[in-house]
Image 1 (cartoon, rainbow, N blue to C red):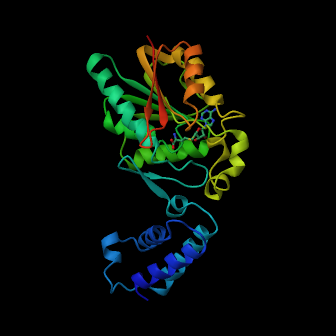
Image 2 (cartoon, rainbow, N blue to C red):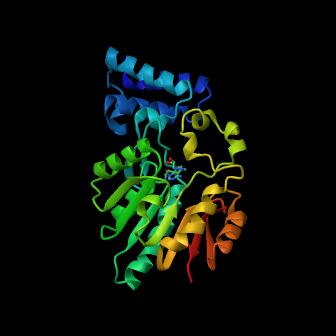
Image 3 (cartoon, rainbow, N blue to C red):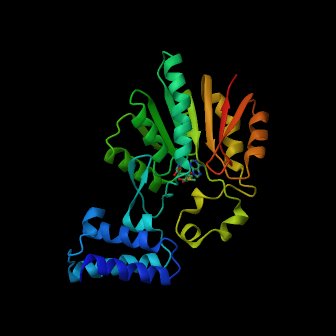
Length: 284
Ligand SMILES: C[S@@+](CC[C@H](N)C(=O)[O-])C[C@H]1O[C@@H](n2cnc3c(N)ncnc32)[C@H](O)[C@@H]1O
């Protein structure tokens, strides 16, 4: 059988199971199994072995049952980096790249203004994707990533190593608890922010496969914003900054929480759909 025939077969099967991006995902499964480039797949004469065909069938069946494609192939692209993922760690989302982009903009200003060491704290680091992207962009910064999940920290350490990042420390713990002695130029987080009651309505790929502790933001989804914004001022250097990813309808609530925590200079970055998704709070 040729790889192209297999591609057609897998694509049709996934489509029949209601997978939205069936053709693209079929392509990903085949490329991953055969360890080939996309361009090679479309060379019509590429034959695949019986064994490879069976392997592809096994992965296809996992996908048809609802497992996210990223867990099956074991990695995802994030901000130009290859990030390994698997059960127990949240799959980085494209919208989180906005948080990285905005943080880079703010940190650039601080690198030029301050002579002192730039220190960055990524709370709820998960796979480490945000911290690693920032550490790579700012090799002279000292970056910390905290997560309470052991599995997440193991993935984060592996991801730093696979991307050859050295200026980073991943520590398991509850929010600021492991870094109480340090002051930061910048604190960022993409914390759990789904309302507890909304989790059951999420698509099966998320609610049945991704870790609940990466999603659950408490009754109103705002628990982590309250905790982070209340404590952040204690751990910020002078003129420090906090950047947070927020849910599509959380900007007003997060603004209020930040004002009550003493933040004076508050703004939001909108996503490409015009929705406020990134909170930016500065200390005056
Ligand atoms: C929404 S995920 C974000 C992961 C990653 N930063 C990203 O953007 O892909 C939230 C993460 O918060 C972690 N977490 C939940 N409660 C925590 C706590 N109290 N302290 C530290 N991390 C926590 C979860 O384990 C999960 O990895």
